[in-house]
Image 1 (cartoon, rainbow, N blue to C red):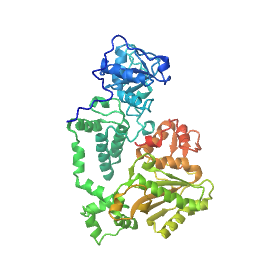
Image 2: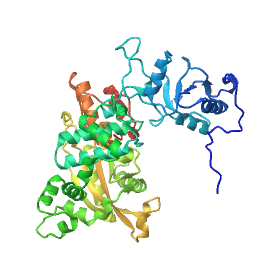
Image 3: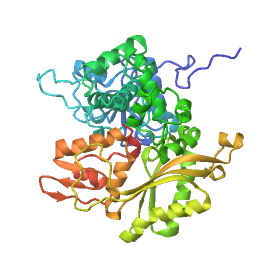
Image 4: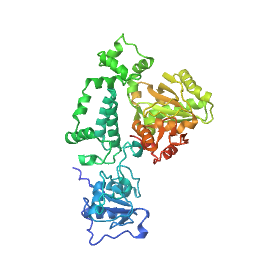
Length: 510
């Protein structure tokens, strides 16, 4: 039997116990002068704290024995941000600076790397309720930067793919989808916002106390959260998943070209399976739906990042054959860092092209791919964009740029990874691709809009309208107070116009 494994960060019994006060790092041993660490003993214990302090100092970190104004990072174990602030209040410790409040996992990673590592959401401790200065009731205590109040707007939150609350967000995603199928917009938005804000939290909700102070969690949402905490599942979600109407709509809308109206029609006609739908001779399908059925197995399977990158190369080759200076940017979930998706979106823009050249490009690309046998289906939608038109006030409004919805025949030999399709003897895969052609001066707005996520864009437009008296869409940003269009060369400039901190694409997974 193998001997039990011990953590490299666990104190060893053979290590001599230290007596007296711990020695602070000597100046010559400190490698990272701008970083000053204090380790909280609460819930950690004296021995483990001393061990971690010694390890960190050996790696060149400055670790203080006592908390002082020079401390930049407070590290704690099994404590929330609320717990740390409570401890500071009880100890009557005043810290004039704003240190980061971090989980001990951050320090352990730093020790392992031998240098400071990036602080991410999983490391930061968050305050989940408002705190007041006990010496001055009603006066809010200044909070560290890592524990500021959570915003109701997704565009003021950084949401990565590291979801600590997936059991809750999966539930609300299902409920939102069911409401969308039933065209219950208000409830759909309620559940979408709840899922969005829970995805942004850097801590896992384990009790109802953890939900205090979090916006967008109404009484119904909290009831569902409480049930999941207590029972491990939601009876409402379970009922939806077993609902025949939900199951049918989920199945029907998985077909390319089938929306809610068609799904409603098929459901009322008594259809419950795709095989019955396809075999019914009385039904007439659109060209898009016929393609959706023909390549169904490929289209419902996930597109890998390797496949998306292979498509990207072929798109750039085709576009730049006609417009050599064109920029082709992969947008959507893949730009936000996802490894899987259901389609691949591209934004195309060219600084040196004429309006006629822009309008002719997508058709030329389609003709080229048809000759090469790479095109299985396409639908080209002409531009209805007008430069002087005000942005749409609708948060879900589609843009007016020229675009092409297509099914691409991807040769699997172009994919830079092992694919199961090869083992099945198949040499190609049908991939859903969207191409959008936008004028060069509107590229920043189009890129922001097509990057997503859906909820991030909804909240960004809501924020512009309600907080800044502006109107934003994929075409432009209009200041209603000044009555002018605001120009932008980049996404960063749009955020600046709105008075927002810039959010990277990989932090927009709301």
